Image (cartoon, rainbow, N blue to C red; front, side):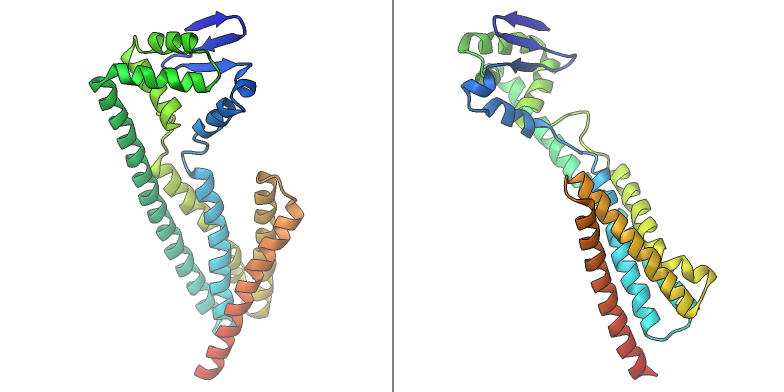
Length: 265
């Protein structure tokens, strides 16, 4: 659907309606723009969020674990097995937690959509009035807002889709995939955790320890830099911060492991 009146234009892709107005930001003090920002669900799949947390947790937790066992004075084989066990336990626990979290979130969204559908069937007049109010908030005058809402309400599916997007701020086609989030978390944690384990597959003793520190430190700085870029901040500052926090955790566990190892032996 496409309607045009003076300075206002209305454009509706299949299954939904989007209203654009050049005067909405001025007449409503930016309310239309703010609502548009809130209505975008962003990364509903959760894959990026899971990947970032997965890599970070894998790097910090498994590097600290490996450092702790290395500090205790155990053999390279013992350190390797501890690192692999930490990798597997962490990766699968992260994946399971992410799956449950995303599944619960998706079910909550689906429930909201079902409630909206029930309300639309029970009282379409009230929902039409609510849509008209939404478009008035976007900057349309009362007659134009009423006209758009009336046009939308002629088709049930279009009305529901538009209500979900405009009132709930959800995209019905992007509610998030639990499996995508779980697999992303599994893979990213594994990738991060491998950094401290790889050297012990080929080396032992001090050589393996130093290489593990170098790999984990480089990965921590790189991940921090990427996060900084995504957040619009300095990658050097973010990378250094990430490296400092990870190194602090690894050093603390290494020291604890050294003390415990010395007492046990």
